Length: 261
Image 1 (cartoon, rainbow, N blue to C red):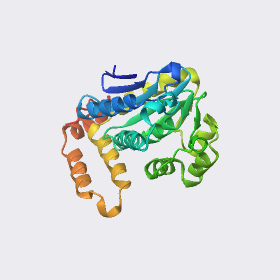
Image 2: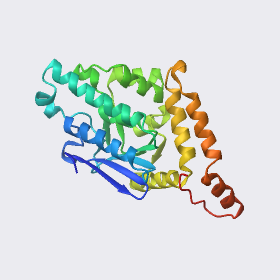
Image 3: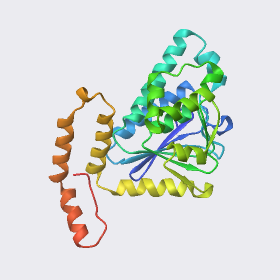
């Protein structure tokens, strides 16, 4: 445990838990740094194939920044700049993480919580989930990265509605606008996230990594895309032991056992 962030691994699934339920998992600067460190650790661990982000308790995923810490963490122009540098590094590390990422969302998902959620590949929410970005009520500047990532998931019109109005969107609205991939009954959230994470982890790691790499390249300017790297990754799939295993498992009508080689 570092600050109020818990990073743990169960088999091939790494989990990052925002553990400050008494504050609805509001995030301090220390917690942002802990998330950045956990992402680096999971990225370097070859046994981890999927990561899950979730919040402790039943009230919130992440309810945004810890406003009670603003006087110590964001009281000056310089402090705000440092805070923004740390959060942007964390969002970028999650957005471009080389392995699949899933947000399991219960309760409040506000401000930085929405930013974290849209940085994940998949978002699975319980029926209690509520989404809002109240920046316009706090005179907080939302920069290019945050707006672009949000618009990339839900479209520019929906992103403008969220940011202009600063209102709360319920889980059904979030599903309709594409902010949520799956909406499940509240008591099914943990099992649904676990099932998805396990299903992804059991699939061919080279194929999954290639899909993630393609999506990362798609977000770049066309002139800066490394298409040769993607071609090499396609070739690596065809030359892999996992490709042989996949064919054999199909013919033998059994589940494949992929190793990532």
